[in-house]
Length: 245
Image (cartoon, rainbow, N blue to C red; front, side):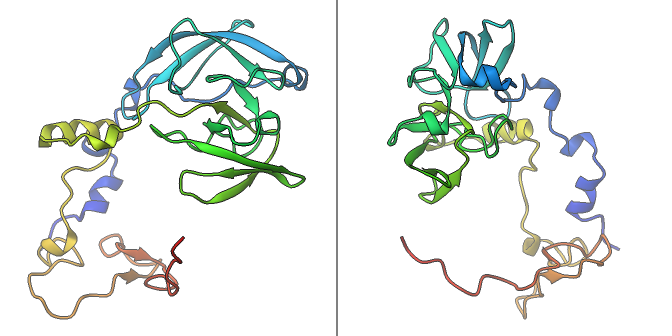
């Protein structure tokens, strides 16, 4: 008789698989602003640059003249005590927050909102940035880190600059303990054993025999001990290969 498979153990929600979210500083999001405040400008100052466990990029605490403090990811070149601005009439300088419709073409931006007022959803990892390509009646065209373009509403806010921490992934871990602490902070399972390396009693895909491979697609109504792999997939993979850019 086999044991519980990995997805069953993770689903129980024990401390072994739970992320240490109580150590995290705060969510990174822009402050909510009224329509009148968005048309003008609100001055602020960088109070502190902190590390958030589980996040590759550092965070910055900005205190506005209204008394509100918000946390956001840090662009390169921002320092403690630096004056910042947020609003439609803010200057286009590193660390300031403006609507995309007010940012000139060719500017590098980060922490971009997908819809106006959502606080920032895209381009938030260390070293990432997007480029403002053009302004059209449908919205602002952005060139994302994936080299693809996307139309975004002109009222969506973004931060001027490139996210700090570029080159973070270029440094090797060297020791398993370093990787362990990173995965622990993120709440990821480490080390991860391949299902094919297990015995058949421990995983539906496990077996030491090199015969025909088992099908990785599984029904949506499969029991918990069998519901692994491509769940309710219409096909086992993409039929068309991605064109080279």
